[in-house]
Structures are given as structure tokens and as C-alpha cells.
Image 1 (cartoon, helix red, strand yellow):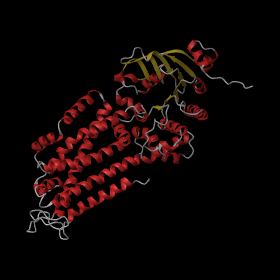
Image 2 (cartoon, chains in turn red, purple; image 1 turned 90 degrees about the vertical axis):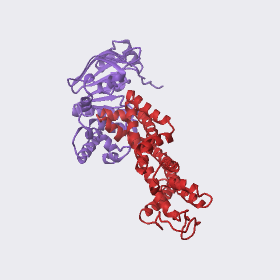
Image 3 (cartoon, chains in turn yellow, cyan; image 1 turned 30 degrees about the vertical axis):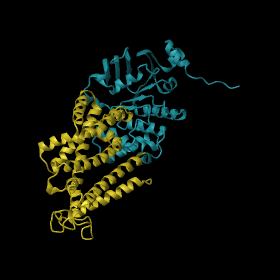
Image 4 (cartoon, each protein chain N blue to C red; image 1 turned 45 degrees about the horizontal axis):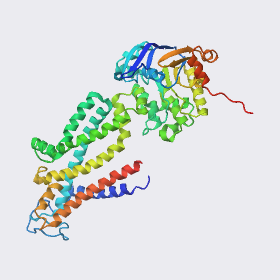
Length: 263
Length: 260
């Protein structure tokens, strides 16, 4: 394989963050919710990211919180990709009234500010990690559907698709065995971009305290918490923000690397 | 085997019929040529016969009987059962007619995967046999390749292999040699002639090139503006064309110019 710096750096960064998160599942330096009197300590050997105003170890909290963020982002992208691909494939392939109906629904969903839809969904479903993921996933569907639809509509007129039709292949087989692998590269870039948007959206939601509940400290939740301590404990915001940045940067570089590798 | 009777095809919004009432018969084991310039309706005829035409975009009337069944009125599922099993199709552009991300092997096996219960090994064996049948050297090697790793001539043979792997009754060839250079053209035509002779596969060969048609067809129909204007053996057409359009097509064939 050709030398691909983007892909390599991206993989290394993402592996670091994921390793950090996986480690957090089994071991953290301190219990993430343990409070004591060592409050608002700056970073030191005992607390590499310092402590917050309740004396909780920020590194431990970030390790666990990043896991929540990752889960939510992955779940969101999974819902958006799977449902969006199904809708996009059907509308792109069949066209006609199916296309009109689903795409107008799509437009309707896309025409509201997503934060508004999220607010409505969360107030309907209730808060918490699972509901958050579902709500974000629904909001992500239209963009995937649109991308996939145009790819399938284009593939519809390709000769290799006609060949498959003339072999007597069923529509499902044509859509998912023949066309899907051929549009995969487009989908991969959409997935990496979507993942990053999902991380940011989760952070924004939790920041507005309509996201996860306080005991499932995600990175966004911690960012909003850190805001009130920006003067007394700036390391809280910095440490949390840095992990978000690393995660997004890593995945972006992977996406970029994959795209360049295609050409 | 194939009986086309009074077939009319009109695309919605078009000012004239693409196919304006044609009759054409292909008997068992026969190779029939359909010639005409672009826009004469020959490809639309082929698309209608293969069931590829999108029924909601056209107005169809008449009858296209394939082994007794009316293709135009067959439900989708029954049409699919014919496509790829009893009817094989080979396209003009072998380069684009194959899935670029699939290896050659699975593409040759496609019709078997769709229509039969054969195991993976059995399909592989049949595919390799078909690749050998179309005179591809080192079929195992080709089997593992991707389309972009093959030449146009190789791919056209692969397409033919994919079309005959299920032992179809009829092969529909839409300009099968147009994208190829002349020596490869001759080889492909020889291959088609052999397949017809050895396996008795009937063929409908569509071309704008009378020379190509003359080499393997026992009967030729000339199409112009949606009508069949003349039909006969290649000799009849070449020696005594009855219709001025046929004469024009014959005159369009470049002749060897003697040097000196």
C-alpha cells in the first residue's frame, strides 16, 4: 500500500484515544466520582489533569466520560448510516413517488434547526445516553439519505448495473451486493464527518444540559461543568477539550487518508 | 424461439415511435442480425426483448414471444427467472459493463448465484469451464482479476462467458465488437460462430456494421426509423439489395483500395 501519512497519523491518534477509553473501562487512577478535600488542584504527578471543585480527579472523569461520548457518537452514526442508506438506496433506485415522498419528509426534517428537533425529541423520549443517541441518530438520517440517494440514482444508469439486471438479479441484490460496494468510498467519508459532528453535537447537547444525566459524565457534560470553574480551574476545560479535539482530529485524518487512498 | 409480432415502442413525450411495428422471428439455433444506423430502433428492440426497458417510461404494444411466453406482459419475477438463465446478454462496452469492484470470477458466476442452488465450488467449476470455453488462456488467473486488470478483448470474452455460463437458449449481442480493434473483433466473431455451432445457442446480433453481421448471421434484418425495411440472407442483401437504405449501408462499407 502507498504511503499514507494522513491515515497513519489518524489511526495512531484514534488508537491512543480509544486505548485511553478502553483503559478507563477497567481502571482509572481514582474513582471518577470520589470526592475529597483536595479541591481545584492544578495538574500534578498525583492528578495529571488536576481536580475539580469537588476534589474529583479530572483524568479519571475524562477517561470514563470519553467512553460515553464515543458510544453516543458511534451509535448516532450507526443509526444515521443504516437508516439513511436504506432510505437513500430505495429513493435513488425507484425514483418516482417513493422518492418524492421520502425526500420531502427529509427536507422537512432538515429544514428545522437540528438543535430544535433534538430538544423536541429529547423532551419526548426523555434524557439519558440511549435516548440521546436515538435522537441524534434521527437528526443525522437526512444527510446520509441524501448522499446515498444521489449515488444510487447515478449508479442506476450504469452499464454494470444493467448487466446485473439482465442476469436476473433481484433488486435487493443489485442494491446491496452490486451498488453499495461501489459507493462505499463516498459513504466512508460521510461516516467520518458524521462521527465528528456527532461528538460535537453530543457535547453541545450536554453543554446545554439536555443530554446525558449527571452520573453518566460525558465530555460535553464535563465541558459545561468546567465553564463555571474557568477562572479557578482552567485545566478542567483544557483537559476535557483536548480529548475531544484529539478524537475528532484522529477520525478526520482517517477519513481524509481513506479518501486520498482511493484516488 | 423468439417471435416478435407487430411491436410498437414509443417513449413518453417522443414525437415518433422508436419501434414502429416490426415482425421478426429467430428460430432455434439461428443467428439473426439486426442492422441500422443509430436511432433506427435496433437497441430499443433488443432492450424490449431482454426486458430491460423501463415499462413506465414507454408505451408498448404488440407481442414479443420468448419460447411461447409474452415478455411484454410477464410479471417481474417471471421475467427475472428468464433473464440470465434462458437469455444471456452481451453489451457493447465491456469496460463499463462489469462491476469495477468485483473480481471476474464472481461476476461470471452471478447468473448461477441468482438462478441455481449450486455450491460455491460447483459455481467456481462452471465459471472456470465457461472462461475456458471462450478461449481465455489461464482461466484461473483471470478468475481472480479485477476488470481494470484485463484488456477490452479479454473482458468481452469474460462477458460472453458470463452470458453462457447458464446455458441460455438465446444470446443477445448488442454491438459486441464495436469497442474492440479489428483483429480482436475477428476473434470474437469466430468464438461466437463456434458457440452457435457447438452449443446450438440462438443469437440476435445487433450492429451498425454490415461486415460484422455478414460474417456470422444466417439472416439479416435492416432497420430504419423504427421499421424493418428489408430482410434476407447476407448474400441477398449484398448482391441485390431491394431497399435503397440497404444499398446505402453497403456503400458505406470502406473498400480496399488497390495501391499503385
